[in-house]
Image (cartoon, rainbow, N blue to C red):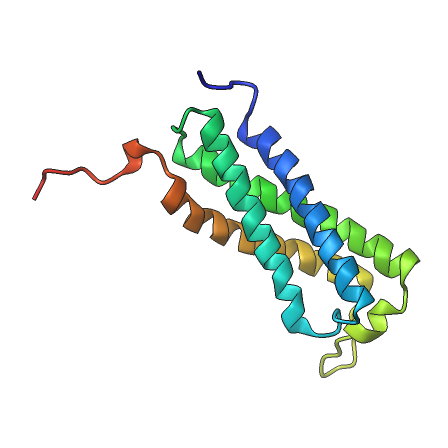
Amino acid sequence: MANSTITPETNGVRYGLYTSVGMMIYFVAASFFNLTERIEFSFLNGLILAVGVCFAIARFKRSRDGRMAYLAGFGTGIITALIASVAFGFFFILYAGVINPGIMDGLQAQDLFGYDLSVTIAFLAIILQGAMSGMIVSLIAMQYFKSPDHQPMTGME
């Protein structure tokens, strides 16, 4: 029987918070090993985000007895990515502003006109990167998780 208490929104918020905790733990571990200055290690947060989105969609599908609407699954993935990105962004503001203010020295990015990367701009970049990559991951994941009624018709050769 389908669990009607689990909606794309509640499921997305729950898994978004779980995912953000994973991203926070990775970020703190990376900062202890001074890996935050190397941009290639920041993309592992994208991998954590992708895993969280896939888990959220899989749980939502299980709660619907293996059948879910495409847009409900897609929405679950987007909400998960957005919540995870916003929560991680706020954590970054706390971490870079209070816990370890020196971290911004290693993350400074200057453009040709000399503008420095501020914590606020980093926060907005985290949200934008997380939301966009979460949407793309959700689109790809839904190709795997979509319900049987979205499968191509057979016998029409």
